[in-house]
Length: 301
Image (cartoon, rainbow, N blue to C red; front, side):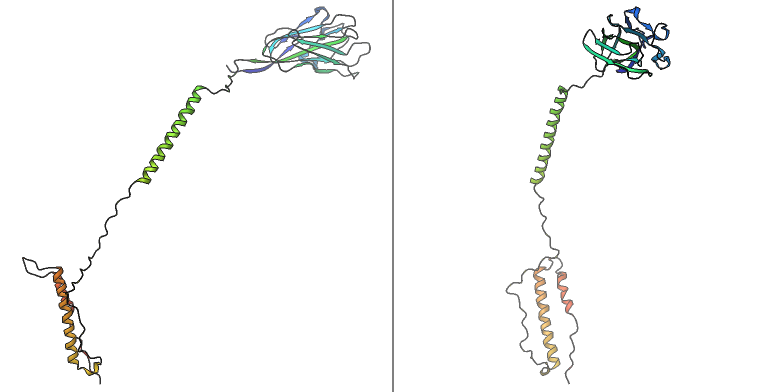
């Protein structure tokens, strides 16, 4: 059950608003209910009193004090009285003392009115805001055997706490929390080591072998030293005008035939004849590239 905090009242006439327990007045014969008191000389306004009631008593000089006792269970309590104005020939000052639980808390209240016509209502004469949530007995009594004291008790308010208080979270660390932290730390360490090992393996992995470079066209083998070398014609004249056109054409044809012969020799070395057919490889067809008519030169005028 959740804890519930509430304020309750103790009326001078009707008692506790929940339990109905009435205040205890002592001596009982000197206390009067204010609205019905015919011999009382002080008359507050009932409309301004709590529940329109109050209890009236006084301590006269050389007489015993008068008191009221309140029983309640709670954590705080306040007591309220009515304070009269100055009235000639009447005791209107307050001189009170109180004690809680046979002297656990003690205090006093004193007040001398300054007005000759106004009553003061809801005046706190006792205030105890911090108490343990247990049963208490509060006693308020007059305390002036020399000058006397008035006592117009109206009501009291106390604070109570019901239900089971919410459990407080312990400041210490539970074993479950410690175990969770340990296992969590171990897991993080193992995860870090696994990632580190994986990264190291990636770095040490052998790169793939490089494929050999294949040339689309093989290089021609070197021509043997015994191959025929094209020699420029030695009988060509440096002056073309001194050579007849027919002689020049014949010399160019000879040079061209020499080149074709060298190409055929090289091709035969690369692609030998087929033993079954005796046909030369297609390389021999290169001579067709030179099967062109010879150029025609016109003699100079």
